[in-house]
Length: 201
Image (cartoon, rainbow, N blue to C red; front, side, top):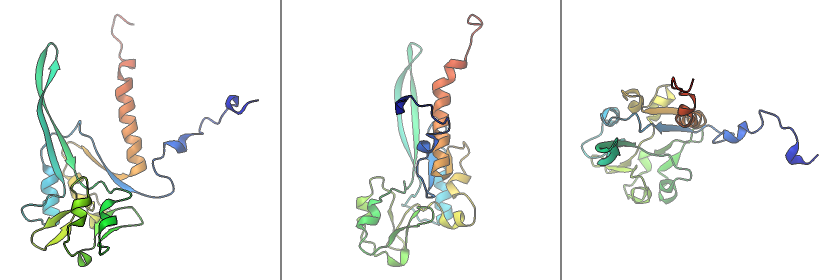
C-alpha cells in the first residue's frame, strides 16, 4: 500500500504543534483584545526596577483613534499595544555588544544585561528593532526588560503581569503560550458554527 494511504496514528503530528522542542524558553504573550491602556504594567515595571524618568522597559503604545465602519455608520476605536523585550533568537543586541554585556540565560532563554560589563556604547540600542534596550541616565549603562529575572527565579511572575487588571499579559513556557494562542483563535473561527437561532433548530 502506498505510504500516503496508510492509516496513521491519531496522535502523530502533535509534536509538530510544539513551538520549540527539547528546550525551555520563557515568553510573554500579549492579548491586545483585552488591553484597555491602563498603563498598570508600565507603572509596576518602573517601580520594580526603580527607574528614573525617561526609560520605560514596558511601554504601552496607543494606536488611534481611527475610524471604522459599524452598522451603517462609523465608530472610533483605539488600540493599545504593550511592548517589551521580545527575547529574540538570535538576538541582534547580543551580536553587536562589544563587551559581552548582553547575554542569554541557557536555562530559559532570557536576554539580560550584565551591568558590570556594560560601557554604555549604545550599540544594542541601535541594533534592536523594538527599542527594548534603553539608557539609564543615572548610571550611564543600558537596561532592558529581563522578565524580572529575580522574581522568576523565586517562582514569581514578572511585575507587569501581576498588575495587569484585564489579564492581557500571560507569562510562561512558550509551548504552553502557543497552545493558548491557537485555542483562542480556533474559538474565534468556530464561534459561528455552534450558534443556532430558533429558525435553524
